[in-house]
Image (cartoon, rainbow, N blue to C red; front, side):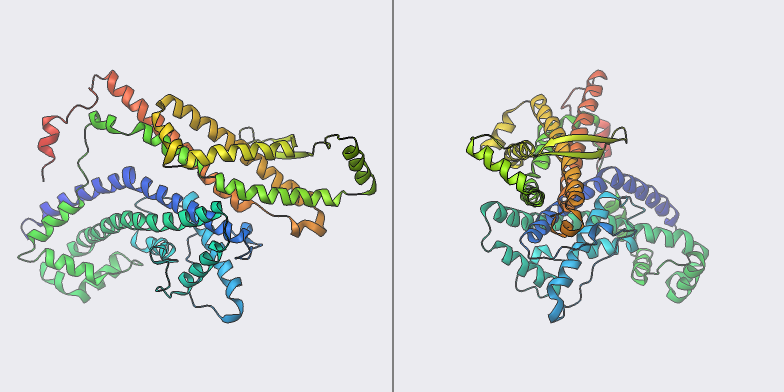
Length: 476
């Protein structure tokens, strides 16, 4: 067609701009939604492990993931239902962890082919339809497990279950909407490749001959899948009445008009900090689960050391109304900054009391309504920032000591009792994710504030309307 050259030029420019917009704006949001999704699942998964509704996978932490893969979705056989579902969920948790912490979120890494396992992970369990009407094997098993978890659950556990399922359902929809943005871009980028690399070497008459196009495609783009439906879209767009279709493609792929920097002050700075406090506060439930395991592990070690003289000493202390000797553990861990081993003596009972106190504080921070939330809204940005930084440091310190305690208990229990030690690797992963998310929001706040200060130095008035040039250029 006469205007085909102009269309290809415009489409190339528009797609390049859209790719940049996706990279800078939307893919970061997508990763955060996946992080929220994984945190919600890990909380539910942990609780079910604690209640004995799922079996612990002894090899879970030894699995090395190189690329994403969807766990099994086939029906279960009667004899190994619980074992198989437990292994599927263990694999699912590992896959989500890899996706959140190691997978590159970029346009190049989210091609049509590479998005298939990501979509598979989202649909592995349909959290939006977790009901009896959905008879998919994993859905049915998850619903049954959740219902068992709710029976006899204490108020905190019941809240974890309800909030986790609700958040998984909500984030599923949000994630799919972001993935659709990328998918729509991929379709048009693929069609542009067909136009520039395949159709450019064929005559206009050959464009509508699919076998001919497919043969040329195999020679020019070997190893890549050929999608006949997208080729049919090109044929329609290049037909006599296809201008409206081409115009629609340009309109759909044009990224939202970048607003002037003067609009930046519309950012909800206080909201960013409160979400950061919600994020770090979300570990309260995980810490409560860890506390129970620590107490059991400490009791296990105490029972191992109950010799005659130990019992006599404790009896004398009780007779004299003396406080028992503090339980001090010699821990060792790697300093994250220096990379060197550090030894530290930890008074276990004091540490547990500090954990309980901090857990109460975090419970209030995690709230998104009520008195605690209202109080946060009334605080200044500086007060919120100070609170966020302090709680991140506190949770980081607790996380560091918990990791050292986890190793300590496994070593001290000895070979004969090691299997009785309650591991906390999964909980440590959940806490780490919360720390990372809270830190990201802290950095985002600082970056936005710095940008605002730069604007003021340049004389840009906060809240000013876009310039006439921008308004004129926004119409399309």
